[in-house]
Structures are given as structure tokens and as C-alpha cells.
Amino acid sequence: MKKTAFTICANNYLAHAKTLSNSFKRYHPAVDFFIVVLDLPNNTVTYNSLGADGIVWAHEVLGSMVKELSDTYGIAELCTVVKPKMYEYFYNQGFETVLYIDPDIQVFSEFKEVFKALETYDVVLTPHICSPTGDVGHPLDKDLMRTGIYNLGFLAMNKAPQTLEFLAWWHKRVVAYGFHDLKKGYFYDQIWLGYAPAFLDKVYVLRHLGYNVANWNLHERVLMEKAGTWYVNTETIPLRFFHFSHYKIGNEPIVASYNTNFTLENRHDIVPIYKNYKLSLEEAAYHDLKNIDYVFGKRPRLAGSEKISQKPTANKFKRVAYLFKRMVKIILGKE
Image (cartoon, rainbow, N blue to C red; front, side):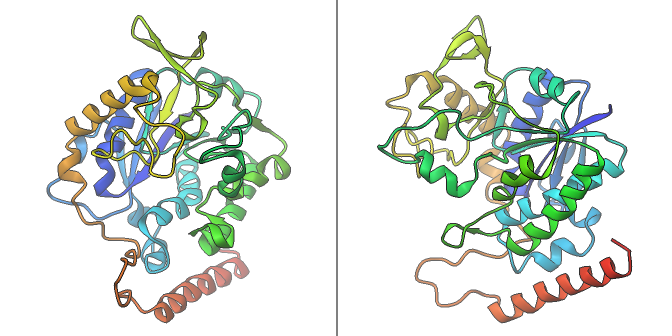
């Protein structure tokens, strides 16, 4: 089957996307990799130097959707809200197997287990954790329940009748409820994939500890390096990819603002890959790219600010108008 992988980000996150792209292509040279840019072109960026096989402009392939939802969702939310439609886009381009990978991920070896599983299953998910966390610190297993059992920094899906139906349902849910609002039970696009094993027949939960290693599962995973190859816990478990979620250059030794359990001071095993990741970002012009202002997405409300620039009422009307247009299309059989 024809395969591809993609990530989504604004211009200010392209250093991360380039680092991901280069690492993915190193181990998967035959699999096309695309960077979906949810932003307008910026003349300071050389897009053909990002290591991807192609750049896809979200606002061009998704029509009015991006603009109409920009007053409802922040940029991080919006990057996840468009994800189901981007799967449909790549399926329509002739790809039968599509992988989504967060831009803040670095690949360390070939995804053998994923592609093997996709020969039998249609969806591959990676859980946040594969064993209980204990009872002290943050995040614990009870905290991760609120954000979803599975981490949507990675999702592999084949084109199949069931997955296409699931994508249509998922799209409707994230358009309406794709917020980061834990008090209301919303967490981007991620929580909805908890339904995948219940709704779909061919879902594979990949419990290989080398996938989606991140700050939230370090209680069960220790990194080790031998002859230039990284492993997890033992030399029988190769590190497939590390998810540098919430890592910010300059905040060392903190690996994530919310993680009170692990830092670069008490986890010496992860120090080398964090140092190399920081170097990769800097070589990819991180310090220049991070300052590019994004075009799409609602602006965050700053502490002490009087009002958000866009009136909330106007935002609601735009969202209702978008949903009404979609309902008309569905009734007329055009969607």
C-alpha cells in the first residue's frame, strides 16, 4: 500500500518540523513525508530546505474551514482540529496508509512494528503509559485519564470504509469540541480516540515501549545507548521515537512545565538525547523561526489583559455559521 506521513504546525514551529522530517526520512526514505503548514507563506522561510517531500498549505486544501474556525480555536487547538480532514486529504491523493506525527517528535529507528501491524489492522494507537505510575507527583495515571488513554502525537490509519466513517465522526466532534479545557472534559482531538477500540473492528494498541517515549512515561522507561543505537530498558527494545512534548529551550533542567517527577537532573539517561535535540532545533533556525507571528488561530488572553481583541459573541456567530453551512452540505449530499 502507498504510504505517507505528515505533521502539522505554524511557521513558528518549523524548526521542530524540520528535525522530525530529517529523522523520519533517515529511517524511512521510501515513505513520503509532508509538512502541513497552518499559516501563510513567510518570505523569511526557505520551505524547500525543511527536509520534507512536500509542503501542504492547510488554508489552500481545506477551503474556508481554517479561516472560519480561527476565531474559535487557538493555534495549538486549530492544528488538531484540522487533523481528520488532513487524513481525508492524503487519502484523496492516493495514499492508503497515513501516519500523523507531532512536530516535537524525533525518530530514532524504523517503525517496523507499526507497518507490520497495519498489514492486519487499520488503526495503530500508542497509549500514554503501559503500567501504573504510582501515587506521588504529576502527571499520574489519574491525571492522564483526563487527557486520553492514547496519545495523539502519533496515529497510523489505513484507508478503509470503517476508518473513513470514523474520520467523518471525529471531524464533527473536534470542530465542535476541539478545545483545551480540562474542566469541561475537552482535550484537543485526543480524547475522542478513546472510542476507536469500541467503534472500530481493527484497532491495534501498540504497547512497544520504544514508541512515544515521553516525560509522562519515564517511570517505566529508562534509555540506554550502545554503539550509536538507543534502547529502552533492555537491548531488545529499540527506541523508535521520543516525544519532546512541552520541552522549551532555556527551561532546562525542566523537561515539561507540568512534570514534577522527572528533570534532566534526576534522569541522567535522557540528558544526551535532550542535548542533541536542542542542538538540532538550533541548527534548524529555532531562534529565528519561533518569533514568526502566526496568522490563523485565536490569540491567547494574557494575564491582566482587559479584553480579547475579538468579541466572543462574534466568534460564536462565525462558528455557528460554519456549522450551519456543513449541515446544509450534508443534507444536500455534498459532504
